Image (cartoon, rainbow, N blue to C red; front, side):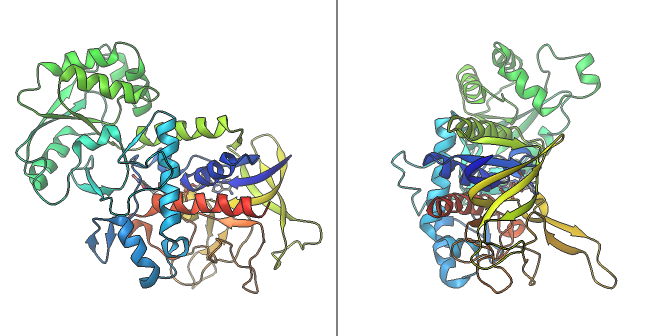
Length: 434
Ligand SMILES: Cc1cc2nc3c(=O)[nH]c(=O)nc-3n(C[C@H](O)[C@H](O)[C@H](O)COP(=O)(O)OP(=O)(O)OC[C@H]3O[C@@H](n4cnc5c(N)ncnc54)[C@H](O)[C@@H]3O)c2cc1C
């Protein structure tokens, strides 16, 4: 099978690469062994930079610009501010087009996001706060500017669902009272018509999401909570209000309750993440992207004249993809490796001989990993991983997302910004070499 671009990985980075290339008319295939982490584990927001030097970041794009001089190896420094703005704008535009808009997102003229756009501070299900750069519109009713009490003098009602144990309204209400100094009360609601047998095994997030997609379900919920609103000015629910129809469900609930409603992500699986994945997948499918999901990319062939191992200047001709029942070879003019590092499966760890620790290996092509710090893939300014002599391993291979070196995702809260920006840039670079 022949394509212009084969993207390995269906996380945010792979999606951005596929969207960028397919948006220009390229024939794109996407190969992935599983869902990206943002889509089943993530909180549904896009985080660019939450913390630098142990301090919360207020204006992430301004910090991204500063990184170019202070940390030249950081992916944001390699990419540059404009690529970061384009990548975020691309994802926000896809989400908006597919009916799942992010608040404060890019203008439709493709100009990217304003460099002084601030972080939002959103409550977490555990009663803490996290910084998000772009968040689904249904979440921003609970946003805090992070500078003062939240929301000043307001009364808040936090509702949980009987039978759904992955979200405790008491915990969240306590967190809000404690850190944002608002009046927060908690209630447990019955899901109308879902008592009895369904509760015995507990309700799952996907079940509830589909339940609230049904006609009449939101009106039933409004009836259930209506008598318990008291003087609350905002009502917070776990992010379960619909899977396919969540935007309509959220506005209908606000209209019926006559006040802002905000969703807070519960424990995984993440419905906001799944909503975003469905939106992106629809967008990609409409642009002809061919999906090989549940399939593992395992080996590569060099182009004619290239060598079987990584060789300077060689071009990669194909990868082999193993699905459940068969193996296929996908040929392409360019490849994007967006396999997510250790957490995503793109870097495999195996036990090493004593006394050393585990041995890390880039799982698809056997590329050389960085030796400093946690194992990651080094790249040059064109997102090309190096071969043995330091030149690009393959002229037509680009890497993106959290497999890249030079940053600490867990500490700085930058995973989605790096994934969107480097994925989009890798898609552009792939188009350049076709
Ligand atoms: C618990 C948790 C919560 C998070 N919450 C948020 C959040 O709220 N906001 C936020 O911005 N970020 C969040 N993140 C970070 C974010 O989800 C990701 O780290 C980021 O989006 C990285 O995306 P990626 O595309 O680089 O990799 P991943 O999302 O890891 O995707 C890697 C892809 O590659 C595929 N793959 C790997 N190896 C192979 C192979 N050999 N063959 C085929 N396919 C392969 C995987 O199946 C997957 O599809 C969270 C992360 C975690 C773990």
